[in-house]
Length: 98
Image (cartoon, rainbow, N blue to C red):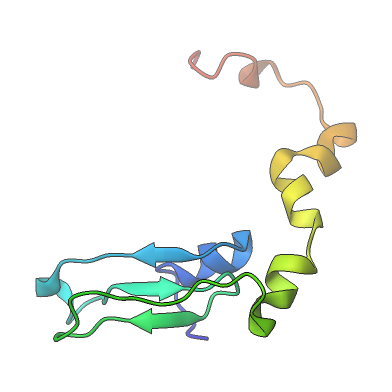
């Protein structure tokens, strides 16, 4: 896994497949890529690649931990595990009010 913040981190943190498309003229800076739910690069475009095609299978052994062994992440995203510790904050009552 590459250590970068372009798309690998959100893919790994949230356990979802992620695509990142960039203009062909910018391949010297950043390539288009398909990132797995564990943050690994599954496919990466280069100067000659016009289309990335890959199979997305939830039962792939490499993704077992990131897709099946961390069920607490779904409840964390919904706020369930923190609901009992939530404190009232009047600043959050109306998000449009600054």
